[in-house]
Image (cartoon, rainbow, N blue to C red; front, side, top):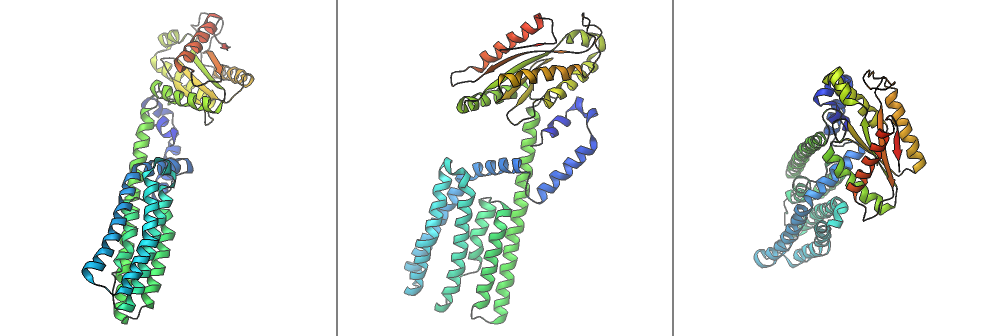
Length: 400
């Protein structure tokens, strides 16, 4: 998701945004929706969410397909008394081709571990069943049996509309099945007018299914985007656009587990704006909000990597998590962070010291966590280090 969307639509920040960038962002999102493809990061998250929600439903439809194929064979044998050769052909195609493909897709969708293979397996089953129906319709003509052409489109309808397979991966498959079906139809010994009527009706049916599937996926993507946007906004501090305390703690717990599993170092830095109450009292709350927003911009710029976190965890308190850095690098990063805040040159005449600008104090804890590491304890230790830096005169940091 575009974190900037959450950061730039919150009330106090609205006056500071670049409105042209918001317009460009909206246009890009609309273009992504219309072509049914997000940027790679969001596309991967959408696919994972879509597949997770559809696992059981896809398994159910694969099971229903197996029951339907078996039922049709029973009906052919017991009720319709079709020619033996035709029944043998239908049995071979159904039992040796269609049922195995549906069974594989069913098994994949029934197992959580198969989530990443859910769409390919279901797509394969849809392709096999549609092409098998093309073959059956063509072969049945030698016995004078007319299998409805709509049966060819039935697996596509189930895959696109009911199983919610993505539209773009289905496009080559639909084109292939349509081409094969039309070529097969034109090769059948039928009256020309009847043949053209069949081609027309099948084309109309396929167009309706594919057009409807496009609308359904557009709605699904819009719903997902709205839900993700709301989740992103709810996880952000409205003033600064950084993670709020609840979301920061949740993400921190996730990073602790990741670092313990990968045996990678983790740094938690607690930050506090020096003499901020005096600044707020003298310059007013609006100036205080602008001050916090400017400092948040610096913190955000210093925590841009994928494994980094930055949050506002109190009134003038912030927290940063750096993932995978050694102690020497962390020491340098803390120095650069405090220097960048000084370079903001935000005037503060009531610090009670010789420094007449806003500064930052920090306490940081560097560690390689294990499965027994308690995040709350580490945060408390970082807070104690922050207290030490305050006692040492502020505008400094302590790293342990």
